[in-house]
Picture 1 (tube, rainbow, N blue to C red):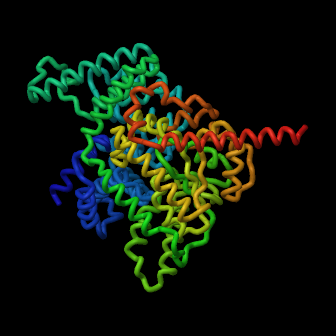
Picture 2: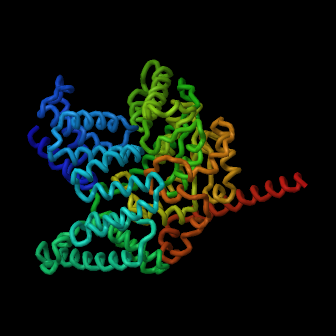
Picture 3: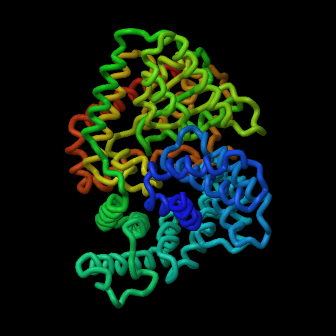
Length: 554
């Protein structure tokens, strides 16, 4: 128990991504169990000791949510714990700033950017570290205040240069539009840090005695963020070959920094098991008949945030983001598959999903008719969705495999959930498995999954939006075409894209890096050509329908 408490005390002072490197999820779960035991019967006690236990438990719950999102069950409790601690802490307690900082980060992860800003600003006023200025920029970006966010990121980078490599690198990588001065600074720092890291790798910890203090021991994660920033600047200058070299280095460093290796063979086995279990040969009994869930699934960086933004702009829809309640229920489904009353079990699990998702809706929001669950991996769970929630709708957004692959490769995702995103061969495996999974559902459960092609969406947005609303059983509202004006928190890498009207410039962007992406194209095999034929046919149908409608008007 002493060891666990000591670990938590350290974690309180570290950024969440860094803290994650110090303990596995198993260790966090063990700490959670120990802390709950220590807190039993003292949940509302005002003593400093009880408050300290609540603070440590909140931090552990936040870390677990970062590693394994489960539908917000931990975040709500962590928020309550943090706020209870703030009520009993003395204003001059040096930990007050850190508690506000942790709470701000928690709210930011929970798609509550406005609430997060309140806590982050309190932390900054109380003298919390530069990491809170970085989180402030993230919150501004999530709210669509891109220019303000860029200024904040630039200010953080300016403050951090020469002092804090992590904050400098992450802030530079976060800026949407880099100044020439910052591009130059990033280039120089990245070159120097890489040289120092190379010397340390070759000669040991004392291999770079000339290194300035802030670059003395650069970590792989910091080098990765630096190279992602360098890529962004070089791409902005249209130096595509040099940009891709930086991108290779960024992904190599990020992969080295992570403890969880991608097991492609395991994913292939999992797909095989899913296809065997949910073959469509028989219909499972039961299921909770509720039309409110709308699942948006697919690969990252394929337009899922855009689909969610369009639907979420409807007055009767609420977007829950990627913090899904389905995954733990799928596990329970597996454990209870031999229950005597299987129909009752499956119905109960479906109702649990509905209850948990509605519990996530902020109290100030009216009860929505539809809730969007954008956990993309739920494509693999369509069999569970069909069994537990027979009236739920599933929308699979697809994008050109090379555009999707490039966009994934150039994105510094946070958290451990995408261990395959740092290697082009692994990305190819995941893209091919996603296409295989989608094709299986079309055969096993025909009509169950609505496929939206990204290229079709950006070319015919109104028509696709009308079809989506018809699918989920809602009337047309013009507001869905103004999704970029909606006041909503966006906590994914696509925030900049959904803060402006639809544009086509992201279609075919892979051609700027065609030579560099040749290994990805080869690994994808026939997937690219098959998708291109599909898009060509879809656009031809749309054009024919549009021409026919125009003739009818005449």
